[in-house]
Length: 404
Length: 64
Image 1 (spheres, one colour):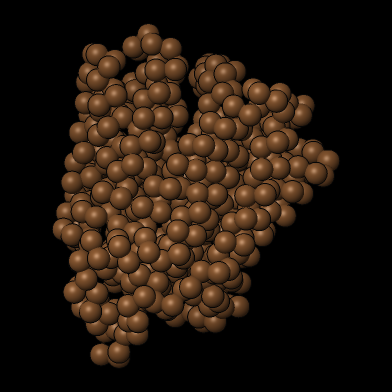
Image 2: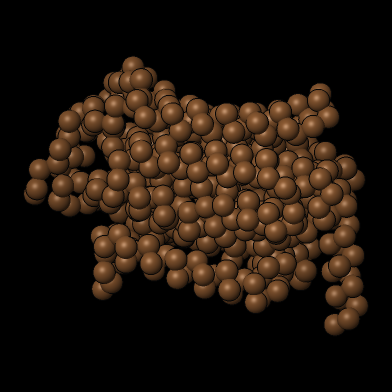
């Protein structure tokens, strides 16, 4: 299926992801002006963003359940309002403590309701199962690509307005997500509709019980935990690691920029592979590539060039796990409760992210070296490659959609 | 519209990737934006960065 034949909902979902994740990507540049305005130091803003990230993960299963029950359209609309309100309150408040509620809780909730879990859940209901992985990969890739367009825009806003004005422009941009949600029609025809009709008979409770008694679902959680651990450890500690090894600061910046560029194409590539080959095998291959890339980076001589090559290589298999993991959950459990089941898996990913960022620093402080944690990431990548092999990926409801 | 074989799809993605890399390498402001964003989103512990950037921006403002 050509990407140009994807239903309009896919394109509206991409637009929503671009705004939602694009604004989130830009929060880093607000650190200095907000810290100076409230005279609180950088730790306060960092804690607010950490709270937002934590809630972003914790809200995922709940917004997923809400999307499966009330429809993605309503959840995205509610999320867009929470996101806009959070940004607007941040811009007008005089009390620094208010930021925990506005930038932490409300934006965290808005992010959850307008990002991957809800969007991919909606996409899964309008795209035929055999093209789901490509659609997930394309949505993730196009969303990431668009984020890069938001970043220069955010920097330009801060140049022309004060930080409060920039926040208010972002709050207005959230209403575009609200507008997109109005046009989201989750109706579909043909085989996808036939499959969904059968799945409707299952309750949420039954779906959760079925998933948690399926060994494969727990193994998918394990794999995605490792993904979160890798991604956040590398994003947080790579600059410090490179600085420790005597490389200039711009080497880290370049490496992370390459991560971003190659991630876009990697997401599409791995999603495409998931439609043509067995998703379990593709997932194992992805983690094996990660194992080799990280092992090569740690064991081979480190230069500015090798850091750039590492950024490109790890970026290529950075978030390719998203279309494969969501595609595998969809293949086994169907589209009906994908947002709930993938939301729970995403929550595990965020726990891995938290531990990756935190343990990286903790172990460094304890041992004075990043080597133990790098070797742990290699072992975890190999483990993740292996845990996907025994997953029974046959559809649990045996929903072989009949031609309409 | 376009051929949908795996090879054709991968070839198109590769061309897009190469064009993006070439474009980013040639467009210094975009490369700077990506690098700065990468630093600010993944490098919170790098204390010298924000003041360096502010200095850089002031330097540019001075020239324009």
